[in-house]
Length: 150
Image 1 (cartoon, rainbow, N blue to C red):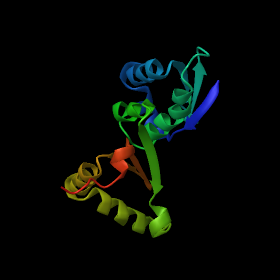
Image 2: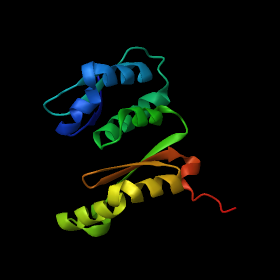
Image 3: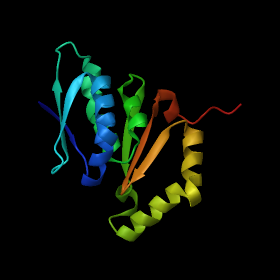
Image 4: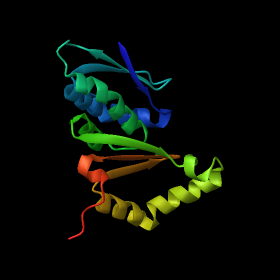
């Protein structure tokens, strides 16, 4: 068994999914059997075959962390692809550890009715999730660069 990641308690149900469908989807995508400890939030993988693509083994912890930090499972599975990357930011690095400052910055990133978040995603061609003080951004290599002006 290989330890992949630890996720928050309130995201364990999302990782398992209704009737275990999300877990099965992840197991099919990575070629491993997942074991989820519902008390600690630890996620482990039992790789069935030695012939599993090493890139998938390397990227699977990112998929689990992304789901644990608020990204929808169907969006997080995109991280298994070679050209899709994950970048995590901690809001507290910019505004300090005061909860009201973190809350204020999180609200500014999301905007009213999610409008600012949608604009950021549209302009950057990336997908974004905000959970607690974490901001996750996933996208391809071109999505990290400002779109060229025409």
